[in-house]
Length: 107
Picture (tube, rainbow, N blue to C red):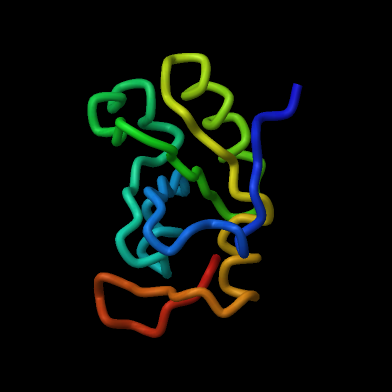
């Protein structure tokens, strides 16, 4: 069964966005205001996952975020997978930032 999903274009500007990519991917470029919890750390960091509303889960193209979305929904969150991930996000011209000030990119 596929988890609930939305396109990048349909992610609200004020959405809680959970980025589950690895640290190097995050460092290269991420959405402003996103929460970063790598998929590899998720089980040990569930207390860091925002609650109290919908969470939009994103990775590079959508595979990891689909698995995380299923896991979160099975554990009481209301999560949706962002189809196409950060590659689609960037292609649509949605904002990207880096913490270092370098030119953001999706790797």
